[in-house]
Amino acid sequence: MREAPGVLKHSGVFTPKEFMSWILLLPGIAALLAGLSLTTDKQVQLAESLHPPVGQFITIENTTLHYLVSGEGEDLILIHGSGSTLESFSGTWMDSLSQYFRVIIPDRPGHGYSDALHEQPGSPTRQAEMLDALFQELEVSEPIVVGMSWGASVAMAYTLDHQQDVHKLILLSPYLLPTERPEEIAFHLVNMGSITDLLLESLAMPVSGGFRHWLVKKNFYPEAVPSDYFDNDPILPQRPSEIRVNGFELQAINPELQMMSEKYASLDVPVTLLVGEQDQMVPPAPNRALAVKMGWDCTVYPGAGHAIHITRFDEIIKLLIEAKRENTTP
Image (cartoon, rainbow, N blue to C red):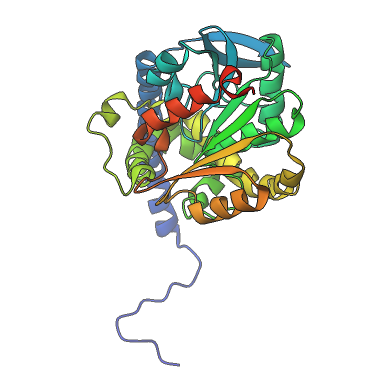
C-alpha cells in the first residue's frame, strides 16, 4: 500500500537527537508541575482560611470527624451530599431549625474537616457506620434523619441498620438506585496511583473551578443559579483530598445501592422523598416509581432541579417542623 503524499511515518525507534529533545523538555515540564503544585497549595490554604472549622471534633477509630450541634429538643440529623460540606446546612438551615430541634450536622468522612476512612472511603455503608459511632457519643435518640443527594445513600444505610431508633427518614434529591453519570469517567482517575497523586496535587485547584461552575449550573437547572451563590460557595470541595474521596464515592455508589435496594421492602420507618421535577443529576422518575412501589411519601417540586435544599428551602423547612414527634404522635 502506498503512503499518502506528505505523511511522515515514524520507525518507532527514537534517534539520539529525538531522545535528547525529549530529555531537554523534562526540566520545563517538572518546573510547570512544581509551579502548579505550589499554586494548589496556596489555593488550599486560602480555601481553609476562608472556610475554617465551625464545629467540634471527635476522634473515633483513629478517624477525626468534624460536626456541628445547635439547639435543643428532638434530634434532627442533616447529611450533606457529594462535593459539599456541612456548610450546605450550617447557615440558614441551622438558624431556622435549631429553634425546634437539636440539629446535628456532620462533615461526612473525607469531606470538610473530617478525615477520610482508612478502608473503603467511598462506601456509604462504612460512612454510615462511622457516623453511627458519632451519634452514639452524642446520645442521639429517635432522630429525624435527612440526607441530601449522595448523602441520602448514607442516611438510608444508617436507617436500614437502625430502624428501631429512627423516627423518620426524609431524603432530598436522593441517590437510591444505581444511576450512571457522564462525569463519573473523570473520577476514575483516582485509581491511577502515583499518577493520580501528581495530577491532583498539581491540577486539582486550577482546573476544578471551571468544572465546579458547570456542575453547579447543572444542579440548579432549569432554574438560574442564585446571583450570590458563588460568593458564598465553599471551595473546600475543590481540594485534592476531597476530589479523591468524591472519586471513590462515585465508584462505590452503584454496587452498594444495588445491594441496599434489596432491603428497602423491609424498611419499617416512615420515608419521604423530595425530588425536583427536572432534576438533571438524579432522574426523578425512578425515585417516584420506587416511592409508589414501597408506599413511601413523595413530593415532586414542579420546575425544580437537583438543588431543592436551596430553591425549595421554605417548603422543606416547614415539612421538617411538621415531622416532629410532637406534631405526628396521635
